[in-house]
Image 1: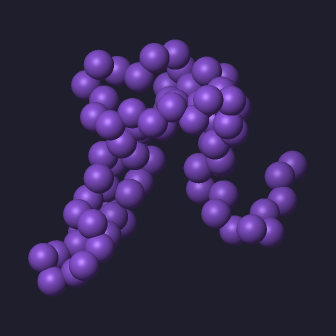
Image 2 (image 1 turned 30 degrees about the vertical axis):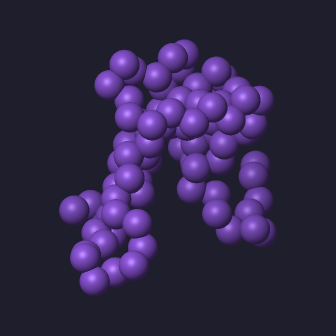
Length: 81
């Protein structure tokens, strides 16, 4: 399952979700920043990052406008080089 947490019927949290975020910038942990980008999330994990419009097969798409998305940087005390 590649580290994803699967929620069972006894758990009150929502079931797994697939969604795509669109934003002005996505800055992945490894690699350069991507402008006018989309980020696909599958089962709580980053599945893909791309430039331009999300694929037609994308499920729910949330447009974040001019936001900068930093996937993986969840610690409030993170240093960027």
